[in-house]
Length: 74
Image (cartoon, rainbow, N blue to C red; front, side, top):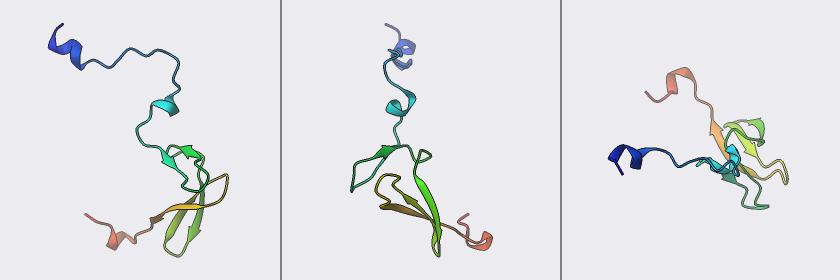
């Protein structure tokens, strides 16, 4: 087997959905709901930025801070 063949992605068996193959998945610590960061999480504005909430139990998973243009890390 050549070096190139070792670097090729594994064959897709067709049994896993794209959601199941993603590396980044958030899991709610309260109810174990799992979804990618851009999945079905509810967003709600707050003073510090935007809260990501579980759609099942409304637990806050994280707050994505909002920066003014002058505060944005460069």
